[in-house]
Length: 589
Image (tube, rainbow, N blue to C red; front, side, top):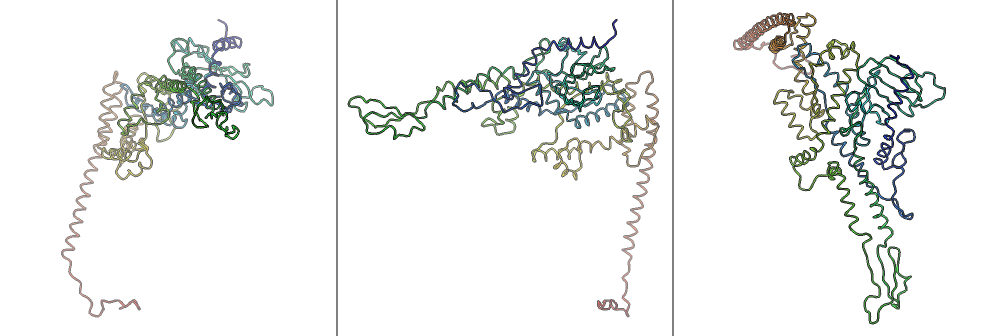
């Protein structure tokens, strides 16, 4: 077998790049169509100005620019906003796991909560969906060195479409044009004064190589020991074959062209046709030049014999047939219906007569049914991101920063128990922004004992629902920490502030879980440790109850003594030689 070398690498890279010959042409058309800018440049970020040039379909040179009604952009932005409202949060659950699996899952939960917040993952995922609307595909890239996520432009990512179709991409090239040399991971042997380059990174999971390419030349080949490429490919629609599908811009391109043509005709007709026509009979005694033709035409004619009437007749004909307007409105409506959103939704308006919240929610649900498949794929993307991170992160690295507050769990533990772990996603929303609805939610959490009553004002100001639930979980977290110290570190210390009854219940629950999944007595030692901890808690609880009883009895005796002393108290007679009044001037009597 021929050893992997630069020659083979060049062949592989050329092989996958040649598969995407016409893709850039389509993506460039869609990019310009979305921005309604015919000369914008997708490949050169240094010369990409949108909104300055405009498509013009009018053949008249003496009319103003045609008003733009970019239905493509309106549909893309409306759908993007609808999908963006579904913010997702990962929930990690164990399937029949023991205490260690539970603690590992909790550590993973905390890690991904922090990761998604610090990297603004919701914005990145929404950008990927936006790219899929415009181009047909969005790509997530996780740097395998810094582990920072980014939304890659799809025309810069090359892979084998057949591998994508069969669900196993083994090699991929990420090539960025006009990449600043200051951002390169290494300078290599580049000429001085070079400001930008074409920078590519090629990953091969079969040969386990990572190749750095600058301006088409291989600069370095390093080992890549991961089983997955650090990319996730997201399609707007599931391709029937290959790796290409139809995007929103593809679907609406022809309609947008027709709308632009109609708008040009309507605009030209409104400006070239006269607003008013004056019909002036000859011999009327009125000079035609005396009429103001600024807003209309003046037409003279020879009247018929015996013709009577006004010497000047005005006419205001329609500047264009109404069927042009009707066709324009129909095409615009069809564009929204093809994508599956209403024109009112794109304009952020509600239909007349729908004033109640229930009616509006019903309308929203009916409209959202069209996007159920896309929403499921959108949520699934979060699951794929979490799984890819678990695969890429070093096994010997702890999930959470080492501290006395965090469990010493490593990514190797996550990978080892991946078959026993289920990743779920659901909406992670804050409290409602409506003050009355927010107050209703807070009162409900108070009645359920989730938050104390004196903290209600805090959540009216800072509507963090996760913080509300964490208040209720403080005691549970402290109890589980005692159990963790017992099992892992043989530490049987129980602080006085720990709720003993709750601790006893959780010890029994943990023992039952360990016993239910016990395999060849593997959990017997941990169950024995918990028995010892349970006995300690029982003794501490009894001691605390006895001390509380003694304290209560002493308090009762003290109250009784005070009452007895007050009941037997004798009035004190005044000293005959001492006045009961105080001289304020002398301070004496």
